[in-house]
Image 1 (spheres, helix red, strand yellow):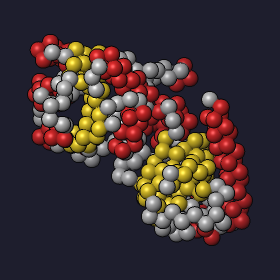
Image 2 (image 1 turned 90 degrees about the vertical axis):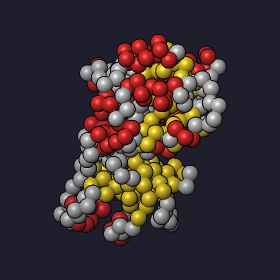
Image 3 (image 1 turned 60 degrees about the horizontal axis):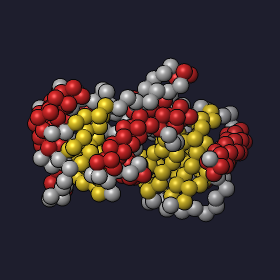
Length: 321
């Protein structure tokens, strides 16, 4: 898969293509449906499938300080898109100048002059151009002038237990913020994960017999609600069952919110300085303050036992799927 940053990275002589445009944060199941239809259409026409996305998130440029919590960094999004069969991902630097483009100018500059779109595939709520003044109707109208058609794909909806809400990044962020990582996984089609570099913390976990990897998470990361979770820690290509703590560590009057992962049944790991990923499978409990360190240690032992069992069951189910 080709990865381009900016219009100037698109190869000279690039031919016709099928294109979809959006932030695609998380590449959740609704996004997967749209991208999948893009790939299907591209294969039918014998042309490449291209995803166009933006960095930073448009809201940060249009309304500074409103950057939403991010569900996935761009490298992860690109990897997920590649698995769906996408041939190229174009990340457009979103600037104040770029935000001023009218819908027609956006179409000409991106879809016509550079990507030579044959078909554009979008969800029904797609908006583009200055002040989000363009929609799928205006996109289709411009297609009549510039020789492309528009395919509109409705998003999946959650089951009745979720009230029939369409899959969306907004819904996923809300579920993550509430600590409902099971619900978030339903929307994403995979466990929600956060990434970052392992840095030195207070090393209290090591003193208690549960050494943790303390993540310096990427900017704007969507971190789950404070609590203890079962999940996985992936480092240097190895995926390990983990018990994960998110919060300020009230036992020791902490003030800084951290993400710490204990690799279950692993001894002697040295992860300092490594870029790792922590994936959340299930919520175990909230953050608590215990009367004694012994009480804390006993509870941590129970957390690890519960996390071990839950992750093992999830891995077994995935292997049998």
